[in-house]
Image 1 (tube, rainbow, N blue to C red):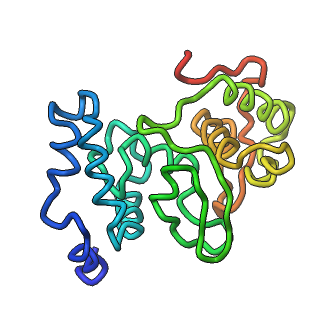
Image 2 (cartoon, one colour; image 1 turned 120 degrees about the vertical axis):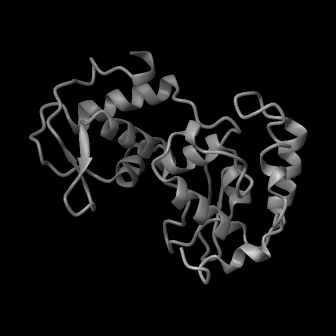
Image 3 (cartoon, rainbow, N blue to C red; image 1 turned 45 degrees about the vertical axis):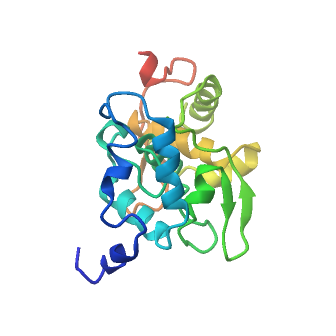
Length: 213
């Protein structure tokens, strides 16, 4: 990454004070619980930072595809688990104009963009989204609708379109799609513009979330 592209780092409110986002938040190490006071202090610094959107873009690019356990420190006011969840939700940018949303809003589930797009979604907990029973129910329903009996290569509706049709949050449907992709039941097509069926043999009734296997 060129120096020109990261020149904004000099304007960061945390410049030269990285300990605020590591040692102060996890004084006993990142395998131990978060120090709540330390986390709130770090977030106060991030909340008033003029380059917090750029910070979020940078860290999400650097961490793309990593598990929560392989992400470290607080960045843009978010814990590693929150950033992992944000990637899973695919909800960092405005759906209308593509602008990176304010991390202050994303943490609290507010979707507010200067282009005028506004809505509310589920806040991201400090320890990240947890796969719940309703996600399992939704995934099995999605498998039955999208995969069971389908021919490999069949184009699927987008997560947004299906979420709108079923009257649920896009973030929940996007998470289900990604879970099914990790199970090799669906996949992006060659141009990465649509989801398709792979032909996996597991049915909706048989499918079990990975963490319960």
